[in-house]
Length: 538
Image (cartoon, rainbow, N blue to C red; front, side):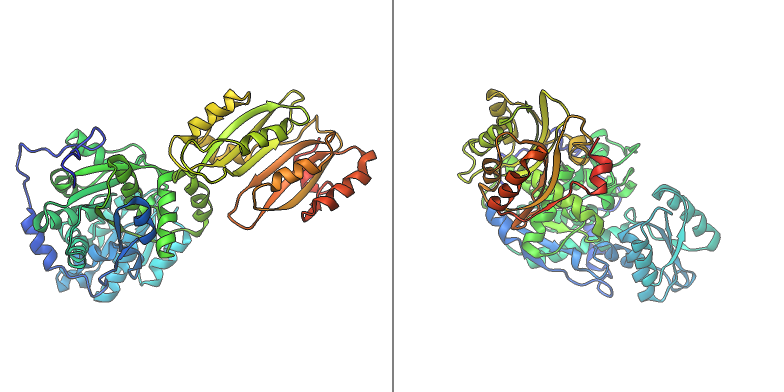
């Protein structure tokens, strides 16, 4: 790494150096990792080069594919190592854990392999797909409480009542050692230069195992912990010098949504982790897409944290020609999240910006605005033409129109330049690119019934996704017709689906039919659709 790279930043707390860490040392953990029993259930996962991402960043990015394990997560390593070190008597009585995710499956698989009984306490809010996955592995599921904390407390009661052994998801030396085998494999698979390894942090078991092994064997490699900006319990704890119990955590990256890190994981991390970083939801969504492009696999949000951090790190430090490793720690992605991920990935990659723009409610102003968008400069970022990715508008006022617009960008902060440019040309604009309310809700709620859209006809068009398609539509229609509604969202296909409201007097029926014929775009009229009549027409 460059000697100019700061060891710590305000967002990356320093490790205390005055006191020597008490408890197990890296040498002790090295011995435990080398003797860990994980390969009855786990396999040595691949360390693959992310070719596309590496070329784009100008650095070599290596992906440790823990998403390819039997339960699609690294968690089975630590869980099995803990159980494999139990006595025959303990295994006969059985084990118990509290988990709503990957740890539950790891414990269930480990117990099945060792011939032991496993009770898995899960919150009653756990999705059925996860409950079914644990049952399929032989786990005895007990649903209790509304949250993980409720499930955890109930598991501790059952542990004492039934004489079971509790398998902690992260705060246990044997669990930590099991996760540390990932670091052992990485160094075996990558004997050459390695500048830094990026590791997602929830409770801290994974990074504790990784940091112990690296600092014992290759101390020059920087160990960088990554957390969500709304779930950064470890980062806050290290900064405060004691464990911080968060009152609330974000749930997008549910695999790392931990309010309180472990005692042992905190002790290890504060002394051995070189740097901490946070990433946000958009950056994680973009990283999920990057991983898919290089591997054709879809990881869960927690599994993409490390890649998101590498991208942020290389941009911050302007790194070139270095080698970074990222642990893809899980791939238990709920299918219904994919739409959200796809929607937010472009913003996270700085490929899309969102705006609210006010334009005069006058004939020709919409066309003028679209012409201005087509002529927007690239601000030196790219020679490719700028494209509209989203357009939401509903006529509701006779003087002013408020439109929600998305357009392609190629770099961070370009949205601010676009906003200034639009304002300079008379179109009052507001940058919504980083506005959560706008991105999650308002973009889907623009519109409603209109009392001023007289003689409105509603049409569903299929436009070819190519430059000039919208301008052909605007140039072909009669200048005395007014657009009263427009909804479009780029879906990455060859054709775009567009909903348009046009104010066309009854006397212009013949000209309207001619317009549709000359335009030549596939079209279905929806003016009599009851959904339109109910929600959009007054």
